[in-house]
Length: 336
Picture 1 (cartoon, rainbow, N blue to C red):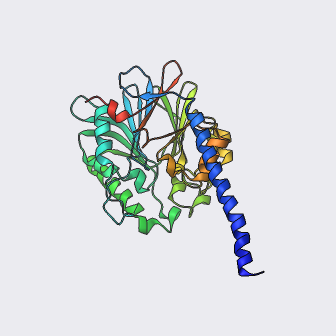
Picture 2 (spheres, rainbow, N blue to C red):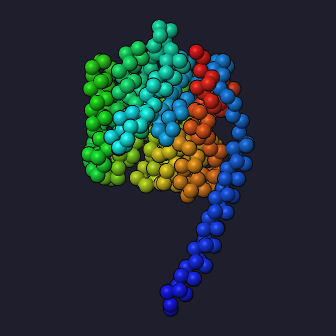
Picture 3 (cartoon, one colour):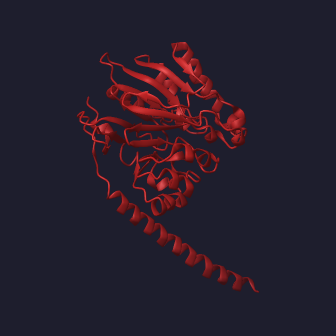
């Protein structure tokens, strides 16, 4: 077979395949719009009419989640900071916006704020990079800090280049300097938090996942009020094998904060089938979700997806009536 003939055959295969992928992507986007049209999202006003709530802050493709219930507040991850060792060029972090939001929403009436606890889900900078600045602000009182012990054996390849242990030790030093209680043996049983019941998952990283990467150490949090629940999946992924380990333990939920920002391997058919979420929150731009993951979420799981950057933050309120109320543009609604 001549080279020209081989090229012709390749063209006849590749071009229709690319066209099919393009049409399938258009179909997925249209279907996603249909699912999204079925949920009601209104701008947040902070008028106090709703019950306990979860604030998904806008920190682009990083996590900062404020949990609120009956005057109690907890911060799960703190967004990406300004000194990410992975970035060669200066990059603006989200420390200032996270701190400002906390001081507005969790205000203590004395010019500061009060957090019952903070939790670092794992040692990637896009999750815990904002904690040093938060801990440096002494007007924010923090009762307790949950940080699972860091083990470099979980991610042998990336520890040195990504500075994982460095940011972890930096945070521990600041916690000690402020005398904040540090809990490294995380509880795995449910506990009350205002009207919410919280439960940590993956409190001990399975030995079988050592070497799979720091995402395998991710601590997930289930938030429950009455018959409604949400699961905050940190960077729990299919690629580490963690979704398979946890899916039966977690059970069905109403809201799912997608693991690993919707990147490749963030979920699986089994994961979505077992959890059966009704609403998906992604701490990333919708356009950055990997195509295969977006297809799985929209076509298979039929999930309405709310992206925190494109919505300027999202709040899921667990109303006393049992209704889930979705609001966005949360920064504009914060009272001055």
